[in-house]
Length: 274
Image (tube, rainbow, N blue to C red; front, side, top):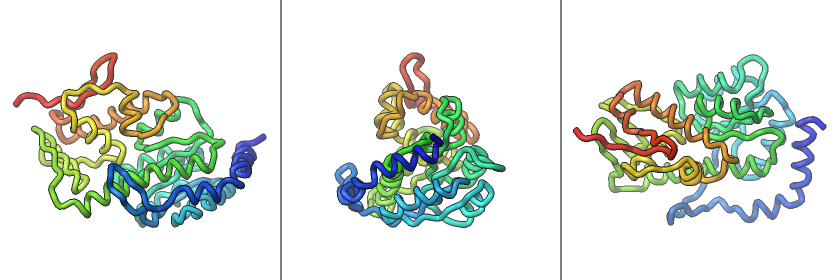
């Protein structure tokens, strides 16, 4: 049985339960004691298989998301640069420009959340995706319901960030030597220069910076920053830390050194003495 057939079997099995599932999840959510209303998000679905795009579009439109499609890497980049999307579902294996290259080029200019879809489930492929800036990774054959839940998780965190940026009156700024994190503006500045981070890299930096000198192991970071399990793939944390350090190091070596590896344990945010 091919991947497309397996996906459709999963979808058909879930179909009779889906109406009850939708009723369970309203558009109003509570996060950290704050009730927010999920906006009508705009999502770009990129896959060279028309049936995959059609299936994802059907399930996501049931959640009132606005869906646009692209069937190749060049078209995806053209649309992503010309439009503002709240999230991109990106297939890894496409003819011509693949998902890795699309993600790499997109990350040079934009921090739009990206979920990678692929039939390759080996660790090296997952790591490669995270290294170029992917926020999440789903292996085919997938459950459409799982895709919806993961989309909701990423968009919900983005909605909370937007709420805090627009509704909070008091400035929420964390200042360290060589590094400033402005949560109101969702902005990171190292030695006077702005650092362009993906949403997940930003969340990871904020989480560590709010508890200086406290050591977090990888399992705890997966739980508290990613908010769901990654099937024991602890290298997810390592690749994000690596990318975070690289981006900080480009503008400030001192800021990059604040992300410290505690060998055999995990990571911490260390404030050096001036």
